[in-house]
Image 1 (spheres, one colour):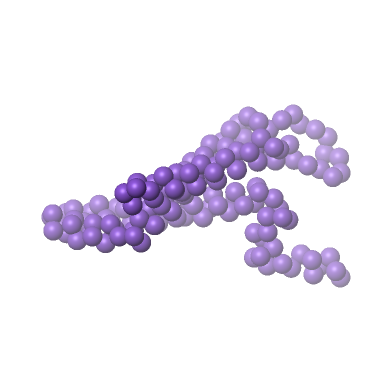
Image 2 (cartoon, rainbow, N blue to C red; image 1 turned 60 degrees about the vertical axis):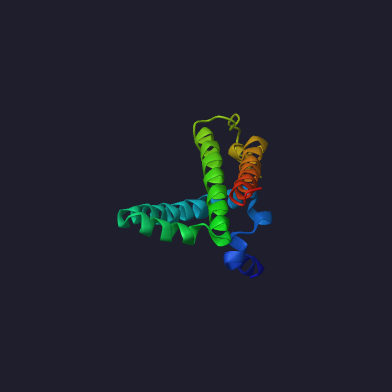
Length: 144
């Protein structure tokens, strides 16, 4: 009976990095950043279409976006873009066999060769590069 209760952790268990590792965190961040970028894309199309209302409509919309809140949202978008791109390149290289390692016998306990140190370094690199890009982008937007 204890094993059944152990597997009922809900959402908290699903995103627990200690149980599944950094690969699960990268998986979730990839999905969240993809949805965030889709939302930004739709908003960007709406924002850009405001130029059809003339210079006055464009300026009114820019006043909404050129605020501290707007800069914070753009900083998050920068982070999502960088993480999504770098992690996507890591995933594509892994699917192509780069950095995966040689196949081994699946003896217990089986550790997948695709979840090796090189790929974990790739995930951490994506997170660090996204953080650096966010800091740089925010400092540029705030005029520092």
